[in-house]
Image (cartoon, rainbow, N blue to C red):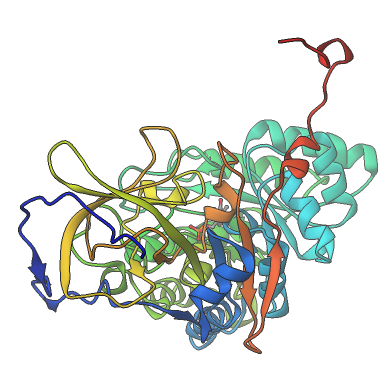
Length: 452
Ligand SMILES: *Cc1c(COP(=O)(O)O)cnc(C)c1O
């Protein structure tokens, strides 16, 4: 006969149907399926932990965003922010929806090219573009967004040597009323640096200034900051027209729209607190439309939204390794995924659902990952039903920044699958293996052998 599981008894206040100011928490309703596929089956097929992406959710988020802007403004173009999630299958969903690529390194640039994005539809951002990166971007007629003066000078030299006239924009940072201001990237608007960069470009025939770019922050809860930024860039574009008789073809408002995640310390869940695409679009488009451009000179509006388009489409499935009592009596549950693959747990309280039904009792629980490191805490305190070894959980809203910022640390990174709009599941990144990790290592001959 199988022995019954024993857990040492402690006296703890149990809560049923925990409520907050808005009623009963629905946080821990079981989530047994993702897009109609059973969590149990996905884990049986691909292992635990497992990242799952919903193609349907990505496409509908994209269409919502696109509709919000195109309903308000006649010329809109999205460019997929590679660093948010550069798994190629994910990028290609966005490219199929019509997005260009937005990259911030030579590596991401290569990835976009390899995915088949035409060079002239790649926006090259970031402070660290090497000489070779710039040469390649010039050859491919990509849009180069200049971050600092040294890059501007280097670009002029390379363009002169290649006898080309690359299309460039400058990244502009400015006071949008938020604190702390993001002023480390690009040229400052208020102190005149941005205009200085523009005159260096326009008083010279080597570079062609076609756009203005900003990316004012990330997970921005304030839509009015976007309104201010769009207003300032529009004024700037009109000034450039007056001063240098140069038409600014596009204004790129960057990314930074908040996803539906819940920031740590936020009282309201992100689903209630984060602005909608319509609210962001209203703030930006109103500024652009009222800035004083003539109809034929209305700039193209480019958006580099990342997290808000992909966060909700991502899930992390995992399993319980064990439970224990901490010295103060608190319940601790150890999961098979840690902060090394769920990087965003450092700043979000992700919604986490058990993947099977359970009773009505909840207990405040500390969620740990499997790493043999004290920092590996997924959640300091979550009201959770008592799960057993091998029970499954679903972590929600993990599609942004986890599959790029994850670390191969102590254990290998899990597989990533995408559930297609046809309801079928496709492997889009294999689970790492000892071979794939060792592949990059070299052993000097004299270290090959030892005796113990
Ligand atoms: C990171 C980044 C984005 C995307 O930001 P999200 O917060 O994911 O929307 C867009 N543009 C630039 C320049 C970036 O660095």
